[in-house]
Length: 159
Picture 1 (cartoon, one colour):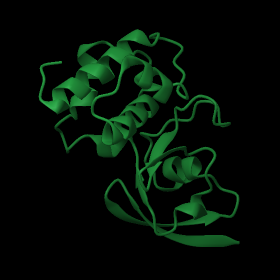
Picture 2 (picture 1 turned 180 degrees about the vertical axis):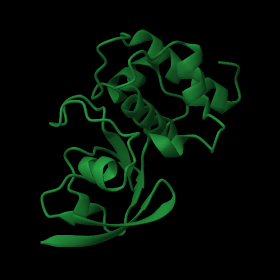
Picture 3 (picture 1 turned 90 degrees about the horizontal axis):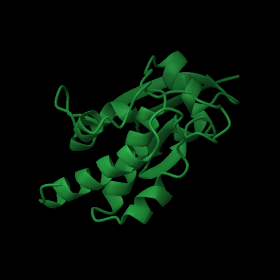
């Protein structure tokens, strides 16, 4: 049986039909054609599919699509303001904190979720917060540095 779901996704009203067992990741990519959210492992181990649901960071491969009924979902797509990059995105580019791009949307979403809660994280807090996201290409130092520099910038520092 298909379920009719109404939610807000990336600030926009969204309606879709989904099967009871269909994941949010599958609906985002295959039904709504929002391919900014990536599938890495499909088991919640890599963080590539991270999204924010009602302010909470979740792996969209582990959440059923029907669970977002009436909720707000933010993907990596909503981080920028149109063509204007969020400082976090700009820092990732400037600091070469990305390579193949599979993990990048998940890291950006997780980092944004952290900075939404804490604009002055320590390096240990950043590493802890991003521990659910795996990268096979860059290593983590550039990613962590980008998050710390963005936090400083958003606090009004130079980063």
